[in-house]
Length: 128
Image (cartoon, rainbow, N blue to C red; front, side):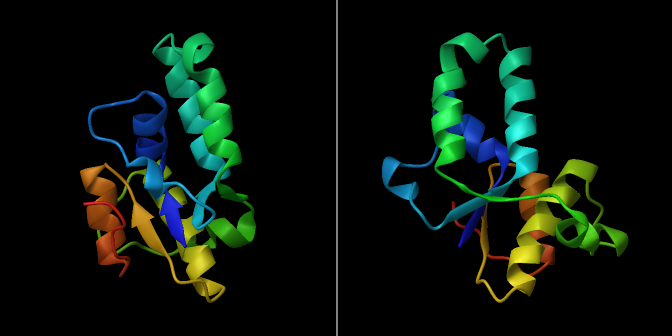
């Protein structure tokens, strides 16, 4: 399973120069409800909700979603091996929750700090 963070979803939806190839997308992808919230907030702040909201909805519906309940966020109650921002910690906690359930998880992100934190937690990266 690949945990996809908001940077990857937005790169795809906004058709940024660096984005995953079409073959990246498939049933092996997961994200957390946080990605939905973050992506909509960013789309609105960029003034792109009308133009790209449909693509965002379609993309989000294609992903398996981890709800941010107490069990999924429990990792945040312990220190991380490197300093992390709050939203990154929640993404990593969701991915770690999947891993704790026996799912093999790697991380897809374009965020350098998120990548460093994920590697410090022992995750491999799905995108280069």
